[in-house]
Length: 351
Image (cartoon, rainbow, N blue to C red; front, side):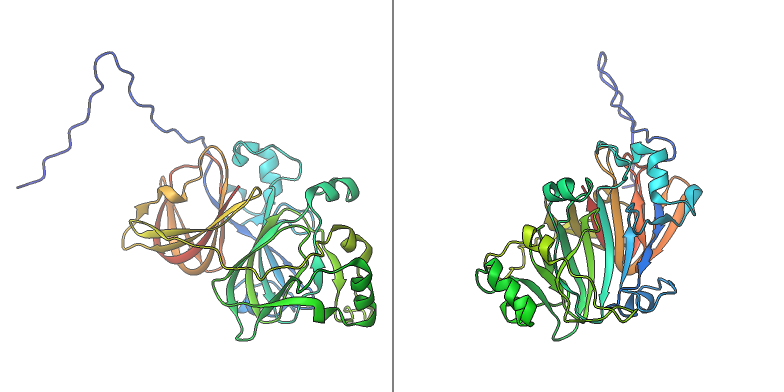
């Protein structure tokens, strides 16, 4: 039997027709171009694996979605191309949705990190401390999603036993601090939540996506007596670190329970939800163009999509935008409906 044309459903007499979604003009997605950082522990994988084409060696971090003054992202597609994301959000604060408008722009920062060498042992302050003692800055709670890891890659997560300030000071002075620090093996697809106050470090051989508060406050406790590019010892911040660090014994972090939820052409799993951000992993495998309700940014919040594997194409209205591994897409709040096609893995971030 032939399929009959679908009849338009008429509203019942006396009833109001359902409202038709009308996106605000100009609320369309756009790609971002990152700022790069050449910290001494970095490698070359962000250029080699993600085609960043940033002329830094080493290339330790790319700040993919950032309005922080230490590394602002720029718009890489559409009518705003070449301008900073912060500039666009000042001009269009509605892109943030219902988030409080701020001269600082976004409340979050998204990075890719390549650790050819160990990072320093460090800790970040919370919002209360940062506001009081760091000129009103945000603190730094963060999460890591492990994109790749060498066979023996590890991270440092707190201490094996309860520590006191005197013992820690002595161990830092005599170079024995490492024996107290809890080492945790890591592998691809692991997730770690690092609250403010947690002593930590990413070890050598890791490729990480980091989602954090929009902050660049890091207090170094220990740095393996390394020298900077000028041949001088890197600055430590022991006094500040001791004021904010949790010195209690840390249990080894367990991987969170993760559940894939399937939709036509896509599967989504929640990786992390906290008061600052929500992060999901999106597995895209479409044979045809589909409209993805799970990808849309509503009126409440912007969204950010970071492609960590594969490629595809976004479509809206009469426009199309291809994306590849390493690309970062900003979706304004109340965006036009988006359709998508491709085979890719993405991290979806909102707050």
